[in-house]
Length: 324
Image (tube, rainbow, N blue to C red; front, side, top):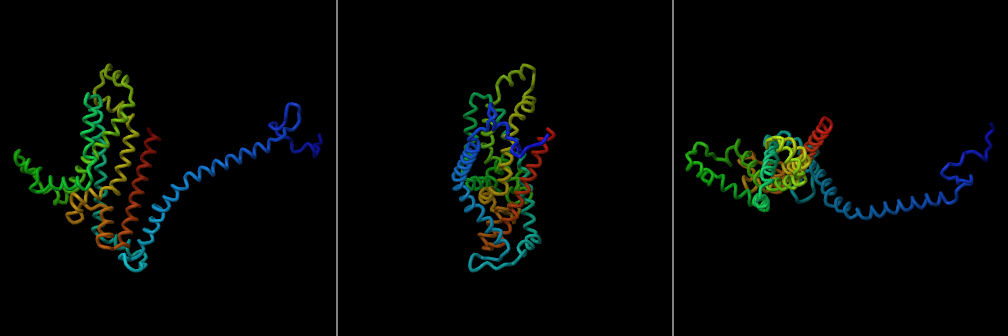
């Protein structure tokens, strides 16, 4: 069969009417839809443009500036002098900086305590008649400024502070310690202080998630003879897992970026650098000592440290999702 030029290429079926005639106006309709889509896209860009501008002005530009300063020596006066990788080489050989990195790693061990304790308490008070009052009382410490919390704990944990006095009166003087001046105890003191300060927020998160669990699930489990621990493990834990992951992520980021005011009020990074964290060291080096280039280098390492933590977190989350 010979194909004539007039019959090729064939007309798509969607553009042919029942009588065999080509439908008119279809290209115009398609062009109109594309124009409307472009208009909607432009409107969306206009809506997000102010936020993009703010992010660029207050996040991207300062970040680029910090990275640039990390390769310079600058005291805040005059022109920054390029020094290449000298700041990073100095940090690599600085033993105190390695101590600070270890401190941040040790503080990460507190995540288990900071997540697990609020979760357990939320499940305990879930069905209490006065649960709302209990949650309010527990939440109260979170409204206190972190530096005030640090100052209060510095008084309580002092050598002659209330904690040691109570221990001695109870005949437990052997347990009394110099909590804030003993290197291996000071980070434990920081962990307990932050646990107390953040406890209420965690309880509120978990309590809000528990409300979404139908009471029939709990009643059925109790009828079947399930104990409290079994209910927590088989019902509460799976339902609250997304909240636990969220709270775990928030606290992970806080260990690197938000613990400065608490530590400033409690120990001011001492003794030595035994309770100093990366964010606190940025303050000491860059602002207190006026070494802005070196402080910027520490900031860059802080960001890299945080990025590694987030990658580990995301990798763990994907492994759990893949293997249940």
